[in-house]
Image (cartoon, rainbow, N blue to C red; front, side, top):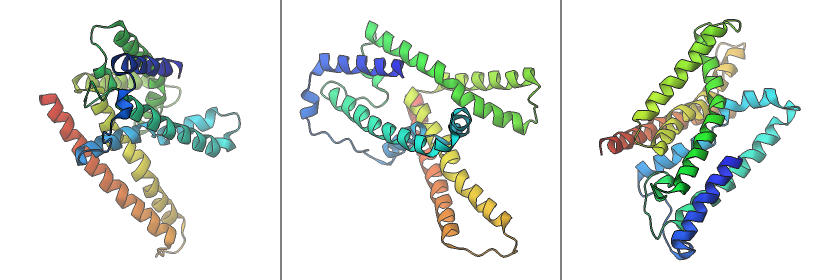
Amino acid sequence: LLALALSFIVIVWQGLVENGLTGFQSTMNLWPRNLTDASSWFGVVVFGYGIVPFILNFHESMKTPKHIGLAMKMGLILVFFGYIIISSGVRMLFSPSHSFDGDVLQALPTNSWLALIVRLLMTFVVAMTAPLIVVPCGEMIEGKLRIGVDEVRKRIAVRVLLCMSCTGLAEYAPGFVHIVSFIGCFCVSIVGFVLPPLFCIQLKYSTRKDSVAKMDFISCCDVGALAIGIITTILTSTMTFGEMRKSQQQ
């Protein structure tokens, strides 16, 4: 958190040095220009709000696990306001001198020590938060391969291969924002919007004794949420992947 705070302090300072407060006096439109931009925005937001893959780890590490609901609600509210203030503020701050499509690092000087500090801080943040993603993903792969808890070497091999695969994919990605957006649209969207209603439907119908289960209001909501999740995932993933390939060809 400290590294992220320092990164944004440096970015804001650079914006103030270049443009002052003139960007906040503009009337620029911050809404997505088309469906592709909206899909990219959706992927980044979903990636940032992807609490579902980590909630079990958070629940197990809490001193009072029964407060997981309150903690998650407060955390998401803080993230919501933080996203609005930081993203919109930084975008308006750099608006007089930059019209970039991508991450904010493009607005920083390429041969400046400020840009180097920000990139090092971002690298540190990724290195520290990567285990939060690698551990649950590795555990799912280990479960599918039926690797036991005592098979330490096999578990290490799975997680090392997972990290190497992700590193190789990131090397060929045209930019950090594109890969984050695609992961959000495809992976996190499936885990957050498709699987939960699907599991609810399966659990509800598997626990009922009668062979013909009746559709009640909750069941209709689950089916509607599943349909919306599938359509949104397919649409945004397709648009984001097309934009990512287009940027890579350029």
